[in-house]
Length: 307
Length: 290
Image (cartoon, rainbow over all chains, first blue to last red; front, side, top):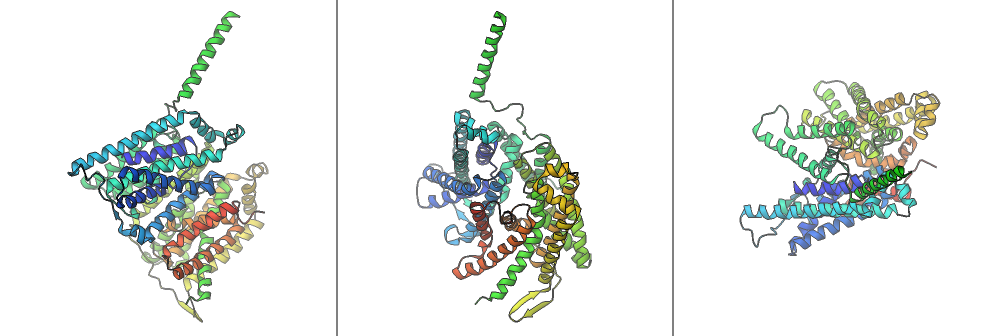
C-alpha cells in the first residue's frame, strides 16, 4: 500500500499541483523496479540502488517530457502513455538484460539481519513507510515554498507565470523529474518487496490505479492522495479476499476494474475535487495571506473606526 | 530474402486499418478537443460483436458489419451524451476529460472481458487466398482496402458536399463561429461520435478477423492510431489518410529492418512511438495544416 501511496504522491505533485497529466506513471515505476533489480545484483548496498533507481527514472522523465512539454496537455498524455507501453515492450524483448517475460528474481536486501519471513516483512514495511514519510514531508514542504506556489501558478495560468519571468518549461521539466524520481523510488521498493518482477506487473493498469487514487482522494491535496491510495488499496485487497470467500456471478477482478472505471467517471462528473474537497490545500503561504488579510482588514476596520 | 511488393501490400493493409480506425478518433478529437482513450474499446467492441454474429449466429459478414457499426456507434454517442457532454458543460479540464475517457475504457474493456472472457478467440471464416506472382493476399485484405477506399471517398464527399460535413469542418476550425452561423453544434458532435465509434467497430472486425480477438485488441493498436492522428494533424481527415499509410509503411518496413538487424519484432509498436516523438519535435501541428 505504501508503495502505491508514493506513486500517488508523485502524481499529486505532477497533476494536482502543476497540472501535468502523466499517463505513463507505470513507465517510471518500471524503470525504478528494473534498475533496482539489476543494480542490486551487482552487489551494491540497497539504499544506493534505490537512489540509483530514482535517478534513472527521473532521467527518463526528463527525456520523455522534453518533446511534449512545450505542447498542450493532451500531447503529454499521449506521449507518456505510449512511453509506458513501449518501455514494457522493450523490457519484454531484451532478454539479455531483463530476461524478458521470465522476470528477475531480486535478492534479499536485508539478508544480514532478518532471517525469518516475518522479520523481512517488517523490514520492508519500515523501509517503505520511511520512504513514504520522507516523500510526504518533502512534498508538504515543497508545495508550501515559493517554488510550490509557482507550480500552482502554472496549473492555474501558465501565461501569468511566464509574465512573471518564470520559465514554465523549466519548472514543468523539474516537476516531471521529481515526480519520476519518486516513482522510481517506489519502483525500487516494489521490486524489493515482491522479490520478483516481470513485464506483466507493469501494465497500464498501474497508471490507472494511481490516477484513481489521486482523483478520488483529491488531486491538489497531499493527504488526499494518501487517503485515495488507502481506499483504492482497500478495495483492491477487498476484491482479492472476496474472490476467495464469496461466490459472485462475475469475476471479481473484472468487476473491480468495471467499478473503478465507473467510479472515476462519477467522481469527475459529480465531485471533480475529490473526497478532500472541504479541506483545500492549506499552505503556510495561504495562512500567511489569510493572516495578512486578516490584519489588513483589522487595520481597515480600525481606520474605518477612526474615520 | 524479403519480397518488396509483399511488404508494400502489407503496408497498404496496415495503413487501411489505421485509416479506418483513426478516422473516428481524429474527427472526435478535432471536434471535442480531447483524445478519447476509450476509443480502443470501441474497436474491441466491434470485433466482438462481429465475432458473435458471424461465428455464433451465422449472420452474413456484411450484415454483422452493419450491426456492429450501429451498436458501437450508439454506444459512442451514448458515451458522449452521458459522460463527455456533461463534463464539457461543467467546464472540466482537458485532463479530466482524458481521465474520464480512460475510466470509460476500463469500464468497457473489463465488461467485454467479463462477457466474452480473456482468452483469445479467432474467426473461423476462411478467406480465399490469391497469389499474384509472389504476392499473397487474402480476401479479407481486399475487403479492408476496398472499405478504406470507399470510406475515403464517402467521407470526402460528405465533408465537401453535405451540410453535416461542412458543419464538422466548421466546428473543428472555429466552434463559436459555427455556433453563431446557426450550426447545431451538439447534434453534429453527436453524429460524429456515432460515425466515429461505428468506424472503429468496423476496424475492430477487420482486425479481429485478421488476427486474434482479445479484450486488449483495441488497446494494442491504439498507439499507432494516435501516432497517425497526430502525424496527420488532429481533426484533419486528409492528413490522416496520408499519415495512416506512412505509418503502415514505416511499420512494415521497420519490421523488415528489425528482422534484418536481428532485433525482436516486438519493437513494432516502438516504431509508432518513434514516429510520434519525431512529429512532436519537428512538426507538432501535423502534416495536414499549412
